[in-house]
Length: 201
Image 1 (tube, rainbow, N blue to C red):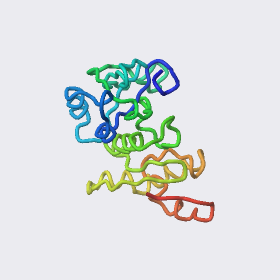
Image 2 (cartoon, one colour):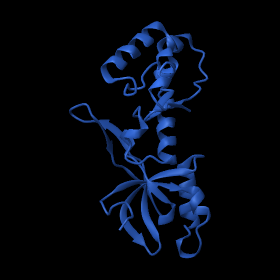
Image 3 (cartoon, rainbow, N blue to C red):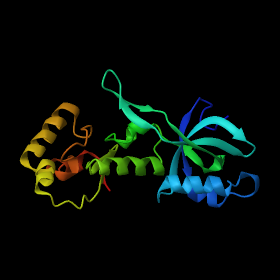
Image 4 (cartoon, rainbow, N blue to C red):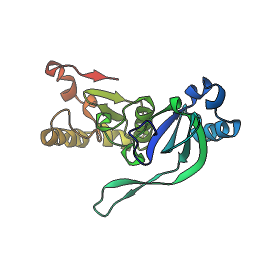
């Protein structure tokens, strides 16, 4: 049993911090630790595949090298690709979402909303120049460190504001996709204080 419902392959996060506390038979080998650190690339978490295999006190995982692709209907989906096999203690694992979900605008739609999943979502969206993400009624805004006038116009210009207002009319004020000029950038968001609890992070 893999600790995540006994299903076939699941995406999981491996916490490098949790590995530091592993002792005895659950401690990963130096080869496995090295592979995990290389895959982390400076992060504290590594995505892997858990097929439910165990080796004593450790889970056998494949490092995740999944990619995203579009299906015939245009929907995004993950294409599985396995990396190096490693053995880690089950206590170092937490649930992860499929790769194709890492760029959605609202983190509340994720199956697994935990620290590594939120970091992956924000990192992916930031790389796509989507600086606004949402988790329900909490808006996460990142500093884009951007001075390109074209980007600023696309994000905060009159056309972006109008696009956002149309989106709000269609989807509702807290259901818009978080596209160019997400709700926090506009007075319409600030004017919603009377609608209940809102958060800006």
